[in-house]
Amino acid sequence: LLETILRQMSSVFKPQRTFIIGLLTTLMYLPGKANFRNLSRYSSFHEKTFSRWFRRPFNFAEFNRLSLVEVIASGHTLAAAIDCSFIYKSGEATYGLDYFYNSSQDRAEKGLEISTLALVDGDYNTAYHLSSRQTPPLNDSDNTRVDWYVQHLQQDRATLPPEVRYVLADGYYSKTKFINGIRELGLHLVSKLRHDANLRWLYQGSQKPRGRPRKYDGKVRWHSPEWSRFEKASEIDGFQAYTAVVNSVQFARDIRIVYLIKRGGHKIQTALLFSTDQKLTALEIYRLYKSRFQIEFLFRDAKQFTGLSDCQARCQSALHFHFNASMTALNLLKLEDRQYTEDSHRSVISIARWKIRKFNEHLIERFSSILGLDFSEIKSNPEFKNLCNYGVIAS
Image 1 (cartoon, rainbow, N blue to C red):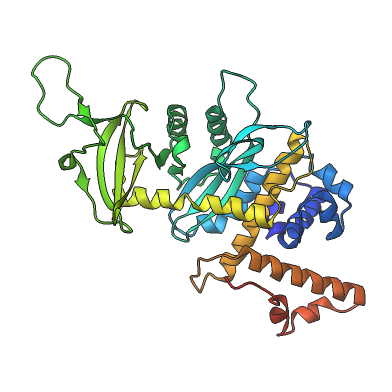
Image 2: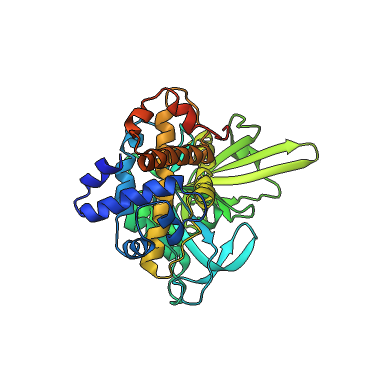
């Protein structure tokens, strides 16, 4: 797969092609941290070779687009998801060091941040990385971080399949700049609103014969909702859903909202979802927003298994290369799992299981190489698969 994809990229020549294959293969089985020295221990490249190649450009977005051709052709429900992740990093000379929100500590801390664009397969219930870009420090007061996230989408819009019409994001992205930027790209946003969002009912009555037509019919009051104005949808995962098309004062546009209520004992859980596409149903908005959480698993698995937080470089180009290489290696593991379990319809993916299996295979290959054994004959043995699965974790 790696060789096939890289040969389709005209800008990649043989030396870089050899390095990319070696790097991504190593990241898929590497135990320990993914820094230059540890990568050199488990590959044929010197640590200085890694340092040099990490500073050279490589189009990971195009690589990931080509690797996901079969996923795109599957006919499943596809959407794009965007989110940020905090990366711990020390050192005064590191590019991009600033104070970013760290969700695990629920506060802003000094470190790095990456903005990630992912392709979400709603039917298979998983996400695949497309591109990651490091959030720069705020030096210009006229530009905000939301401007940077919109720019990220603009730069990598071409990698999204034409079937993708919706961008899924959490409540932080529910801002006018971001929504306007998405609509300019021909996409719709599915996200979440605050419980005190400033919304207005659309006027549905008869108009006066003269004068300006009346557009709005008062505010949506959340402390005492007028349930008769909502359209009641069927129950969704234990939530009672109410939907309506209203006007957002903040966004200066009409949106469809879905108000979810779940009663359990003395507690009442509520959520307010919305979409800029007014034609979506309450169930579609709920399912799309629910699938957004698959991008969180990308960050978790990349940090735990493919060394997303382990880069020892400090320059911008090497950091960008490392973040994308880590997420791309995770993509390849997920694609192999999908190919391996396609017939069983199992959607649970254990990256730890695949790392152990890959490492066992690498170790057997090293033994056969050093001892002068024929690895192809060993690989054809019926017990080879069981040997690769030695010590795997059940998913």
